[in-house]
Image (tube, rainbow, N blue to C red; front, side, top):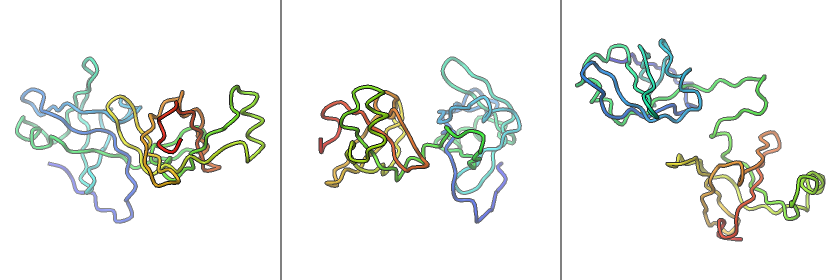
Length: 194
């Protein structure tokens, strides 16, 4: 069914989708999408991997309402597609020097979470950037969780408490991978220590 991909160096994978229920009788499956680029990831000929290295090549795909339906090569009937239910598929990350603003969610793990105390407007925020004492460290990003509505950042606070922060622009307006931090503007009560 799927070709084994044995590369001992390959350990860093990015989740693209989770295979769901079978669609019809000819091997198509519904997938839950975890990528911002489904048209590219599900294009005919694209190769997706399981965590144990099996390869699945997309034969064809289509979008139906808010979901994607995919047919993989060598998955030719409903029984074969039903056996794949719950399987996560991944790709190896490809980093581009051209896209300085782009990052993968896994890149956020380990970043320091900062809250700028006097950041009421953009002018004050820019001035605060120059002064290292103008922010407090709220903790570190310890995990990224795929939530039903959006990704969630698990922040481990200095006390050891853990809080889940929605990864939306209103609450996480800035990510600086190069400097190793992200900025939070959480509403009161979102963080346990604040």
